[in-house]
Length: 81
Image (cartoon, rainbow, N blue to C red; front, side, top):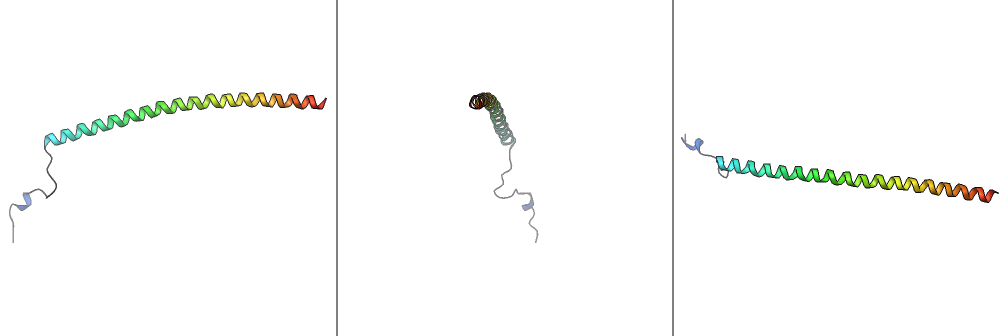
């Protein structure tokens, strides 16, 4: 049995996209990609700022540790006299 013409009909539930649909989808995808890239750049800037803050705190901690070490040595010398 042959059903001529049925093979030419698109599958049920799968509409064939029109040129307008393809363009609309491409524009939507491009917009989403631009938003993602902007969010990534924003995160990079924030992480650089946080890293800068961390570096400052580490430097401050090192300075404080040197100060504590010097005070400890001075106190040990005074007790030893």
